[in-house]
Length: 95
Image (cartoon, rainbow, N blue to C red; front, side, top):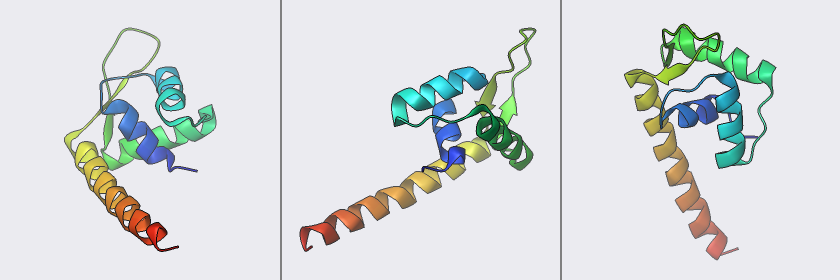
């Protein structure tokens, strides 16, 4: 299972979304179903870390956006995953 933190940050990388929109976006781009409990628990942690922020709105749905710190963390993690994929691909050639 892919870390919900990365999935949420990746979803918000292309714009603000509320919870249900994130769930459907994550399902569409990653093929992963994130349950509401997992999603909202992760959203709470990401807000506490300062990686996402709620957007002021008068709508009952609360959209979130990626912060600069969240973007930096996501970029670091994607770099690490890219290195892992490249290294593993090289190793598989010899398997």
